[in-house]
Length: 180
Image (cartoon, rainbow, N blue to C red; front, side, top):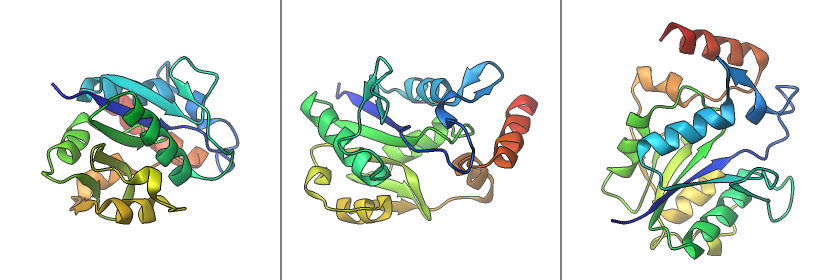
């Protein structure tokens, strides 16, 4: 069976949040641990944490502060070099992201897939990924270079895809998680 990696982008500065988002806890789990658990439950054989050299499964960004597209390209190249067949690329700051949505991306019958108007998460077959050759400086441009199929998003799915960038957004997500 083909091996799939999950790449969690976790190297941002968290300037709007005012603290490292990867380390924020909701109900005793950090956002990074939540993302890892979602990826593993979805079927990821391994996790690569982009931008976090200090963690066991971490990968340093090739050039710090160049943004998520550069980090994603670098991590996709690392996954391909480790003989993974495909990868999900996801943000550390989407604590409501479900396994069901990751499976929708994987099952899209396309070499690459993302949700309409949401650059993350996305899924790509690494035999198709020209990501290492892309000069894209945004994730949207990287998805265009990959020829990603854009899947429709329902109103209920919008919340699952929303990132938490401010303390207020974090509080809303934490409330939703504790109610579910």
